[in-house]
Length: 490
Image (tube, rainbow, N blue to C red; front, top):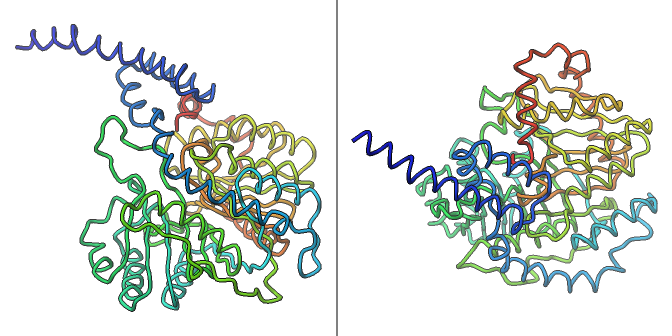
């Protein structure tokens, strides 16, 4: 029996794996046209890890269904182009209310994102920054309870825990009162709660949809292309965007990660309408039964108060975008810096363009600082990030590990002039594979506040120096080298 099994594996299974590896290698090179660095990494995985490489590629690598999957979504996105073309001259501001001029360089950035990402510039906004989960969710739940017409929420992770139940209790109450409530979760990130968790919400009239819910089809398990966005829109007037998912760990209630350090903003004003459009596009793609059509109730045209003046663009990226707007907005902010660039991210796996921009900024005398966690939640990503940090130190970039709890913020602050807050990490997955949304804020007060939070966080950080890297054990250096080798796949 054992001999027969051995012959079966040797004569049947191994040749099949070998043939499939060849097929996948051809697919990577000639059909999918991946980034050259990613292509080389996948070829190495397929050649040197035949069985494991086959499995990894099946779940993480293949993307030849992408065009077919996003055809429907592209039709909705194209409709937005018509709207923006008629508003472009009006939205591209020349004078900002409040007497606070914007330089021509930042106006060019605004224009770039309008052209490449259909991202309108809005000026009638106010911004509140959150760096603590308790404050953020208290504000979100208060806004939910005060909703008068509709609530639209889109989150990557939703957990069946204390805050998850508190949020859905508030949503269920509003749905029961006749408010239109929609919640869009990611089919992987929000897969934890059972049907019983959602039943009170559904019984109250709440509407539920999931982005790529099926993980059963082995030909396309959909571990890529996750909806990583974190957005909430209340009555088309108040919006929340940032790095917080819905779970107790994001409120420092899970001891392993406490205290949790993240960043989000509450926006009141016209930028919420751009967030609303983003929700429409994602909901209409994910929902099969409840398509949202344009209705003026979702886009109130209220006059902004005089103290609502913050210029802002809502920028979204993903595998359905022709350009790479998230990465390009980061690049543009770095290149516009004249004094400082402060970055916080849990995952730092930049491509060559980001590395070059940071290196050149530091060599130009700009104060470039990067803050990453001291403890890993994804071990390969963690060690790969260390290797990229080490590469930048010679150019004068300063880097730090956040030693108290876990830092999950995804921010960049430039010169106390502009900033980005959102869901996109500084890694290949956020740049190319996941659906992300950031708020680009052209406001000195908000940028200054975010910079102050960064400087305050330095009190619980340790600096990553060349001397510190030199004392790392050889086994750690090996981990860094191996992780970096496969970082384009992470």
